[in-house]
Length: 76
Image 1 (cartoon, rainbow, N blue to C red):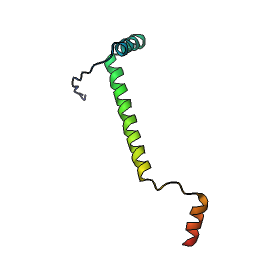
Image 2 (cartoon, helix red, strand yellow):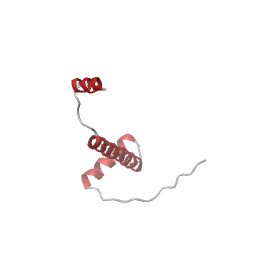
Image 3 (cartoon, one colour):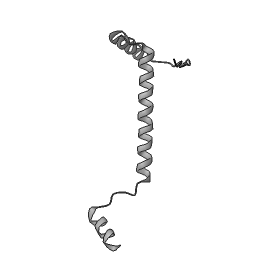
Image 4 (cartoon, rainbow, N blue to C red):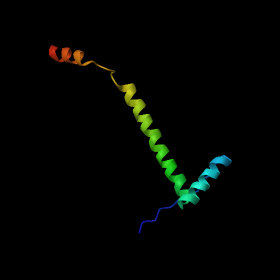
């Protein structure tokens, strides 16, 4: 059996967000901790994907029309 250790992490939430979290937890029968962990995990993935996309766009050579590609290939 593999044991995962957890660390305490605290943050401030607006009263309305805390109420939403509690309502979702009660409605779905899911621990608030689980909801928060999953939300953070998904948000981090989204942020890293967006970063990778911005980096790829900045490194891209731009749009090349099919006609310009055919001409370039024809020169070789």
